[in-house]
Image (cartoon, rainbow, N blue to C red; front, side):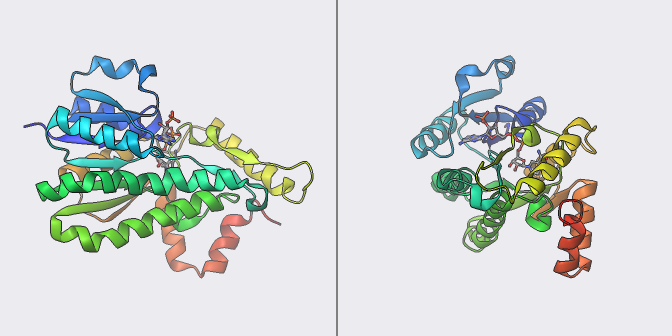
Length: 273
Ligand SMILES: NC(=O)c1ccc[n+]([C@@H]2O[C@H](COP(=O)([O-])OP(=O)(O)OC[C@H]3O[C@@H](n4cnc5c(N)ncnc54)[C@H](OP(=O)(O)O)[C@@H]3O)[C@@H](O)[C@H]2O)c1
């Protein structure tokens, strides 16, 4: 019998390509997104069903999970992929943006997991794959303290949960990709202020680095990440934490061997002087 994967944030980027990859491999796919009325491509796949889900609206999560279980019977893998990146100097960020960063990247994952637990517990089976980032190890991009905070929190949540879910045969995994050339960089907007100019220099430098990265051919596309999601889903990869991408592996290595101050100075040198 075909297995089923449930993915958040499938309107673009990694989530979307992962949905298509699994459908082509014969899996059932519960592809969730905030605006399913805009979806056209997934209708070509009889094994993809689209459900409305906004990770900040618990009622949409409850309905999507109920409807996906009704449609497919059993959900085997859940991928928490949806995210936003709120960048900018913390002082200039609004309270609403701080709350939004946490609401989507952390609270949203908590709500999805909590909604699924009765189903997974009853089955005594299931895999939860949380899409983290190399930013949890490297904090490589300045002005990303809120995004980094959200991914650090996601990692703490995932590690902490292993104790209570392992006896129920529910596996947790963290995937930590480096940059993989999606719309993520283009979608970043920086908080700015007409009154406070002290952060302008670093903001300009970070914007230029991001723009250059956006124009350059990406070192790696999303396929290696999708391959790891597939390997985790099929049990070929059983690792708790998987780092993907040459750039990501390099910073993990440097983070391991260097004292933290040396490591941060090395990463920050093109932005701060
Ligand atoms: N791109 C990279 O270089 C990179 C590197 C490391 C880690 N990652 C991680 O990879 C994952 C996918 O990123 P991506 O690059 O594919 O980004 P992306 O193209 O911007 O996709 C993000 C997805 O999240 C959805 N989303 C945003 N807010 C949501 C909400 N409230 N409820 C439900 N869905 C929501 C977006 O849907 P809408 O269309 O409705 O906004 C979109 O489908 C993220 O967890 C990211 O942190 C990316």
